[in-house]
Length: 257
Image 1 (cartoon, helix red, strand yellow):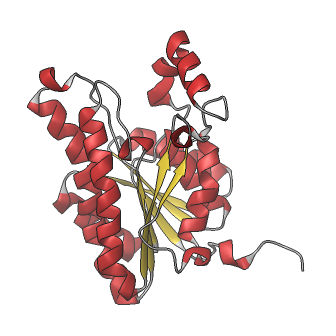
Image 2 (image 1 turned 45 degrees about the vertical axis):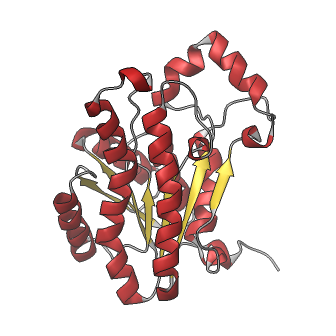
């Protein structure tokens, strides 16, 4: 036997990736495109989306953009309908959009709490609510939620983020319980510490960088492209009997004391 394994071939599939104008979202979209999928990039900044789309097109991907706020349920539903009418049915949904608003819990404002919960947790429900009925009607679909090692542990000043990612873990399982019988597989990827634009200050912090490298058995930060294989697996036929699972990609961080 020779050639790529057809179980991982995404040719003919279309993926919507939220929060994908940069960072992990763009890396995930690129990985799916390299496996043959057409991709829909999402974000709020149309200019950044256009630049990201141009980059992927230059690499040979079939790509379009959908600029909408994932915390706005009506806007998301309208864009999902437009994508399915004008571009293609959505076979794969990756809920990746996320933000961070750091503060000690005793000093955290209600706005900081709600902003993170709305973007990192509620948006996954809203976008999936728009996409899943269409998948169910077709009898097939893949939903991948981007959780975090903070779905399992926490650190000072990120209580809102940990609460959102912990909730996303359980939302993933709730989606699997309700939708698996309809041919829709819902799973999650939980990244550890990765080098991204949003983590630039942490990567450049000498003490924090030393702590992360020492705390992680692999001895380094992850690179965005290292999430692509997991995304392709969970988006492909290779995972057709995988439901409600959280695949942690953290260089061994959670395995070590």
